[in-house]
Each structure stands twice: as structure tokens, then as C-alpha cells.
Image (tube, rainbow, N blue to C red):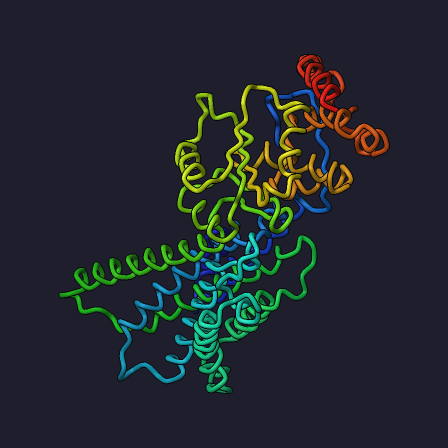
Length: 461
């Protein structure tokens, strides 16, 4: 215990560079762990079913690397806190005692917080092909001219706040900082450039550069906290009053900045888990909220919506009535799932709808776009886009962040031999799926239910 206390004292004493370095090392360990720790979650619905992995790295790392997911939101939170701390430093500054070097360092740190907020709140690329509000939108042809001008001015401001004060200091910055903070500043600069350029970008693509931006913001927060040691003390008579005002003001600013970030994030991702399958033809998502559906429809002008979840159950989604009303008021054809069966006849009927050009663009969704929709999309890719089953299952893994649920294996074993018998018979992964589902209790029941679907499908052909 005594050794632990002495080690903790050694880490947190001094100018804070040791504690910041320790926190950055912890972040790096978490990033490596997420890329190597494969999920082995238990599926209670099919306890005896074997489920394989088809991704090179852990599935959860692929999901985290998606624009707008957890890593970008973490950057948004950290940068918002940094903006709040910068406000306290600015309010409590002493113009007579604060040297120009200290002012330049604080300005540069504030610029890095603004850059982190912009990158975290406006993830790029956008999931639906919209030009977006990230700095990359400045060079896109589809971006309106007035948006390009605004983004260009903001980019110049952020870069000026970030780099100009430090470059103006030159050797003064080197003398004013310790060896630990000089190393951390170099690391922050490298990580910042890594996130901006996304190079190098090893698999999982976009994963490591997003962690690099989290490292940058963590170093910035450590540096901002270290600046508080140089602040003048608050007079005892007004300490409680001033402290309350500063805390309330900084917390209010952090809250407002986060809300502004959420709004920018919503513009980039109006519907949860919204993705493009074929531009202008097929899109998939979770259950769209009313405002998100209106924004996405303004951009893509959906003609058909297919809801794969049977809403005539106690599990009806709260947004279903609003979605149905919106589709009726805007002339969008709405196709609902009915009954319990998710067999070959039902899958074939949905494929028939998405193949008709007069129905494009089509939005296909369930409640969470985690089970039904990825499974449906996998069958579409296997049958219509000639994907291999290994690639299909790997795509589901990377989308979910976990292995496909056991129901996907059961569904594929029952539906794909009917809808694509030749491809199923020659695909090597199909044999593994059959072996994985061998002896499952639900298998016989599902096959009995699908027998009627098979007969109906044969009569239709």
C-alpha cells in the first residue's frame, strides 16, 4: 500500500505531464484491446448454436471506426470540456502578470479544442452521401458556394488559433515548458495531423486515427488543467461566490457546446444507423425519428419504405404512428411486415419490391438495424450482388460490432437454399452454417413453417 501511494504521488506531482502521459498510455491500451478482443457473447435464444468470426480484427473496433460513432462523440465531449476550461482561464486571467508566452499557449490549446469539436461533431464521410459540414466539404463539388466560404473562414480561424501562437513563440515555447510537456506537445501535433489527414490508415480503417484525436484532446485537457496552477488566487471574501459563478458559467457553456455538436451530428446522421446500399436505390436504417425522416426524405425523396418489424405486436415502436402518417401525407408507399414468419416467401416479396425502378429510392429498416435489417441486407447482397457468404457475415459483424445473432444462421439455412440453391450449394461458408446449426431445437419447427413458403414460392415461379 505504501508503494502504491508513493507511485501515485510520483505520477501526480509536478506540472501534470506524468499524469497526462499515464492517461494517454491507458487510452492506447484500451484502443489496442478493442481491436484484439473478439466478442464471445452468449445468444440465449439459440444456446447450442456455434457462431464463427469472419473479421480480421475484433468486430467492435470496426463499428467504433464508423463516422459519428462512439469515438467521434468522445472527441466531441472532451473538446467541449476543453472549451469550458478555456473560458475559465480567460475570465480569471491576470493581464498584468500573464506573460505573452502563456497567452499564446492558452490560445493554441483553445484552437485545438475548436478543431476537436469540429471533427467530432461533423464526422466525415457522411453516411448518406450528403456533402456535410466537415472541413473535407470545402473541396467537394456538391457543396454550395456559401457553405464553402463559411467552412473556409472557420478553418482559417481554427488553424490560426492553433498554430500561429506556437510558431510565433519559437524557442520561447521550448524554454517555458518542461521536457515532459514538450514530448506531449509533439505527440499531440502528430496525432492531430494523423486525424486530419487520416494517413496512415491501417485496418480497421478510420479506427486508429479517431483514437489519435482522443489522445490529442486528452493532452489538451491535461495542459489546460495545468494552466490553473498559474492563476491568481481568489480573495477569501468572494471565493465562494466567484467559484459558483465560474462553475455555473463553464457548465452552461459546456452544455450549450455539446448541444450544438449534437445538432451538427444530427445533420450528418439524421437517422440512426443510416447507410447507403446502392445510391439512389436502396438505403437501410434503424426506425427513423420524425425529424430525421423529414430531413432524410428532403435529401433523397423516398418512394417506398419497407418496415421489416411487425408493428402489430406489444413491441410496436413509439415512432411507428408518426412514420406511417408521414408516409401517407407525402405519398410514400409503406410496406409493413405481417405475421410471425420471416421465411422465403416474405423475403422474396421484399426483394421483388426493391428490384422495381418505380419504387426507388427504397428505405428498408427495422427497429435498431442490428438484427433483422442486416440479415435482410446480407441475403440481398448474396443473391442480387453476388457477395460470398463470408463477406456477407463479415459485413454484418462490422456493422453490429458483434457476431451475427444465432437467428441469422437459422434464417440463412432455411431461406437461402430456396431463393438461391445453386449459389448456396457452391459457397464454402454455407457448409459451416449448416454444421453450426446442426441439432438446434428450433430448426425443425422453422423448416416446417418454411415448407408452406417454399410451395407458395414454387407456384409463383
